[in-house]
Length: 177
Image (cartoon, rainbow, N blue to C red; front, side, top):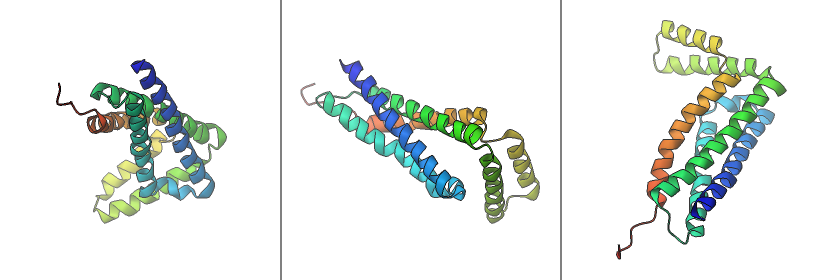
């Protein structure tokens, strides 16, 4: 019964997370492509991995009558994060590579301009900047392969966040134990 609740809630909230991230991507695509490189959109996406899983863990703990072990909390969070990331990456891969491949050129140009402007503020040497831009142009950061690589990195950070959240949401040992 416990494992069923963990799986069911992890999947349900993972779908909610992935759908929310996909909606954010779709809105940014429809409104203004420059928002893809804005710092606050990254912060917004990151906050999704805190807000929705917090609701998930509260809901799961309530379903388990207030008893949630560290392992159960982490497993629930990780299922949610994995499904959310997969949905989000699938949506972006379809958007960037099938629906509107021309967006990749625009985003790459915006990214390069952003890198140029910010690296000047931090005193990055011109040779390093040129090498970075050259590598960026070679890799196609919006390809399906690069999206999947990014998902693996994001999953790693979600794992760390999941450990922190599991420690926060786990049940406290009772005095009788």
